[in-house]
Image (cartoon, rainbow, N blue to C red; front, side, top):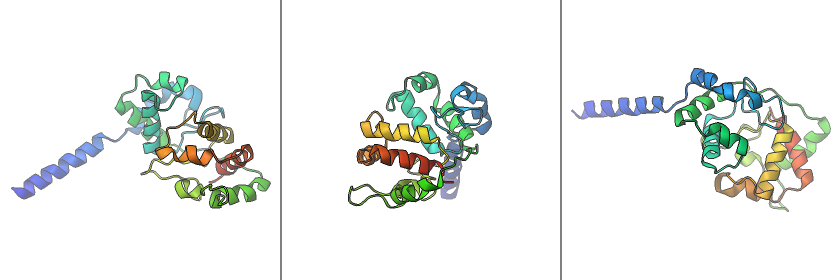
Length: 200
């Protein structure tokens, strides 16, 4: 009897976890409303909008849920996601995370200075290394919902860092990005935006 209960419980947990997953093909079909800004495969043709191809599913789901709830403020995205169900969000996240991001390039003179700040931070200014959360290649951390930031448009990265610095965006975990960005100068942000984009 106990073995049967354990087996049924395991099957139930497995089926629940399967149901909780997004469907790539369903997400592709639903992505038709996203194409204008994010492109057919999540590689936005405009640097006003982020590349979301290859982004972690957990991060994409978090952002879409927070656009819907208003935790992350963006009038365009709020309107787009208002009618999305939880399953729609999971399906879209599954589709976009399965796509490959297009690479960015950076000028050689940016690399040395950018690498120093990204990899080591700045002890005197109490700026932690970006690698602590985003990793040496900018791949982030799926379980912690830390995003992939490599291959992103430099202009988009710059805008987001400026928004964190001004607290116009504050949906980061425990205010970590707000705290870090508050210590960055305009020059730091410009440098990091270009360096990070080419971390691939």
